[in-house]
Image (cartoon, rainbow, N blue to C red; front, side, top):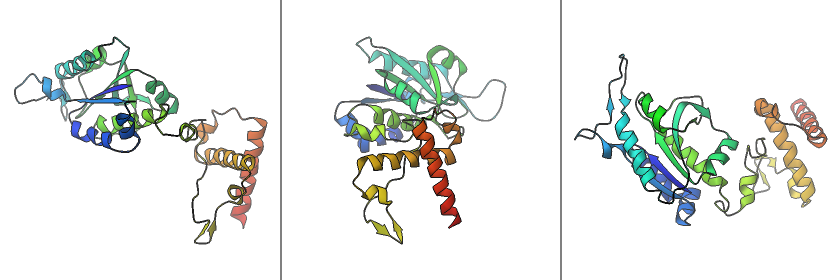
Length: 252
C-alpha cells in the first residue's frame, strides 16, 4: 500500500514512521509512506500557499495551484498505473468508522490532503478530491492529526500488520460492538479480582463472558451502535444476563 500525505508540516506526520505498528509496517515493506509539502510548488518565491478569502472574513485559505501540483507530483510517482484515491481530511466529510477504514485500507494508493487555516480553495476540492472524510464532529487545527489517525487505523487492518491477525479481529467496532474488558497480572489488586470466568481455562466459557461484556458495554455506552445490530437468540440472552447482573451489582 502506498500513502502520500500532502502537508505543510511533514515533520509532524513523519514522527509516526518510526514507531509502533506503523513503523513496523513500513520497515517490513507493507506500506510506503511519502510526504509532500505544497510549499515546494508555491507560485511565489517566499513559499506562500495561502491568501485572503474572497468575500472577506477571518483567516486565510490554501491556494489551488500548490495543492494541485502536489497531487500531480504524488500521482507521477505511481508508475504502475494502479488506481489511486485522493482524500481530503475535512470536518465537512463523512465520519470515519471501522467499515470505511477497512475500505480505504483496501486501496492500492491513497493521497491524503491535510488542510490548514480556514480551509482550501473549493475549486481544488471539485477538481482533484475524490472523497472527504472526517475523524469526528469537532474541529482541530489541521488535517495532519486526522491523517495520522486514519493511517494508523488503516494499517491495523492490513494482514500481518499486528503480528497476530486475531488482535485486529477483536478490536472494538470490528463486529459492530465495543470491545470486552481486559485484565492482566496480578490476579488481585486493591481488593479487585479478575473475573472468575477468565481464570477458568474453559475457552467456551471465556468466549461467552467476553461476548456478554461486549454486548452489555455497547448497550449502555453506545446505544447507537446497538441499534444497528441484529441480535441472535444467544446475543439477547447474554445481554439480558448482563443487565440483570449489572442491576444486582448496583443494589449491593
